[in-house]
Length: 153
Image 1: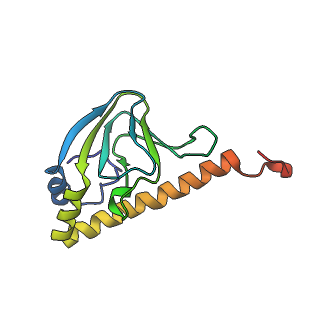
Image 2: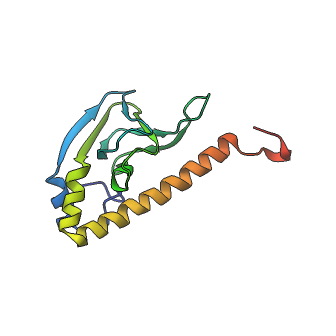
C-alpha cells in the first residue's frame, strides 16, 4: 500500500503496509457525500488517495463546524480501533474523493494475529487521535472561546 510521504501509515514497514493493503479496496465518494456520522457504528476506515475530506462535529442548535480537513495520505477515521467502535466526529467529501477503504473488523483480526503489526498500527492510530483531539480543541476554541477583551463569541 503506497501512501504519500508523511501519510498516517508511513511509520509502518513496507511489509506491514502490504499486509494491510491485501484487506483494502478502492472506493470513491462524490463531492458533498457524508462518509460517516458522529455516533454511528465505526466499521471501516480509509486512507485518502486523492481529494479532501472535512471532519466536522455536531453542535446542538448550530451548524457543524469543520475541525480539520484531510488530504492524500491521511487516515480518515480512527474510532474503528477503540471500543465501543462508534464515530467521534463526522466526515464529508470536500470535492470528489478517492480512498483506499478497509474493513475494520478484518484489520483488528490481523492485528491480533500479528502483535508487531498491531502495535505499529496502534502507535500510528494513537498519533492520529492525539493530533485530531488537539486540532478539534483549537478549532472549537477559535469558534466558541472567549474573545480578546473578555467578550463572548
